[in-house]
Image 1 (cartoon, protein in one colour):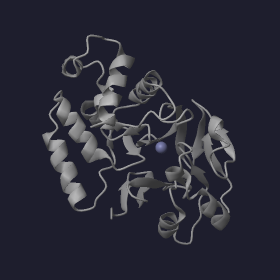
Image 2 (tube, rainbow, N blue to C red; image 1 turned 180 degrees about the vertical axis):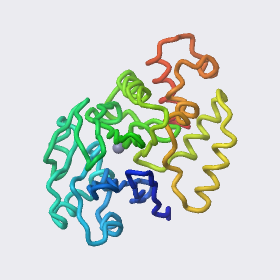
Image 3 (spheres, protein in one colour; image 1 turned 90 degrees about the vertical axis):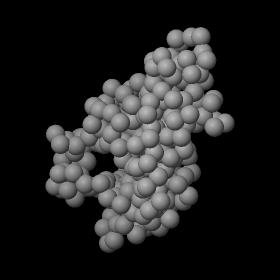
Image 4 (cartoon, helix red, strand yellow; image 1 turned 135 degrees about the horizontal axis):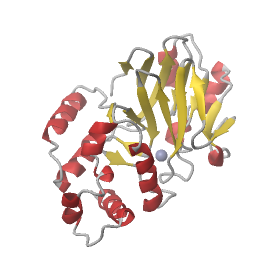
Amino acid sequence: MTKISRFETLDVVVTIVPCLEDNYSYLVECTKTGARVVVDPSEAKPIRGVLGDGTLDAIWCTHHHFDHVGGNEALVSGLGIREVLGHESESARIPNFTRGVKHGERFKLGHLDVEILFVPGHTRGAIAYLVSSSATRLLFSGDTLFLAGCGRLFEGTAAMMLESFDRIAACPDDTQIFPGHEYTASNLRFTQSLGFVDTDDALTEVKEKRAHDVPTVPWTLGTDKRLNAFFNVDNAALVSKLGLATSDRATIFGALRKRKDTF
Ligand SMILES: [Zn+2]
């Protein structure tokens, strides 16, 4: 069982809460004001466990899948949480939904700035939450971006997901990535199989963490751009490895996604 762990900077604390088989929910707290939310509560019990006597200002949902919203009902009824956020297009599929948000929308979590990125592909209404201050940048990327990987295309197209990846790539390279699942080891093996970048050090570190039941998350967007095949559709070595005679980025992205589906 993966251990609960914490990521701390000057102005924010993230508690990484393992849920179900390999999901992560995140408790995000502004240290100056105590304002706090949970991202993607897969189930209520582990969240209640880390909350103690306190409550939450809101639940932030990245998309409607059950393993990301399964704890909504029990948390809302048990703690009286007033806000459950998600993309407006998924309002009917997210339990206890109260507030639709859209791309580019900005609001505050205590002293922290929050911006919504619309990142469809895994679902048609998937969003990511970018939390930032002068000292901190964190991205809660759901099942769109995993460390070294990409979510499955359940509802969207490769072109749509590529656009979402391009949107995320525009964030600062020091942004810490907090994805919806612990898939890093298998994603890195996929990268290794493509041979466009040296994965030895990263694989060693990830295996070491997993051997001790420690989460591999987060790492930075800069690291991910180097190790994630899906950020490398313009990499000539990768494209030639795929045996594709095209420079069409969406075609390359789609071919990568297909290859990973059966990896
Ligand atoms: Zn999902």
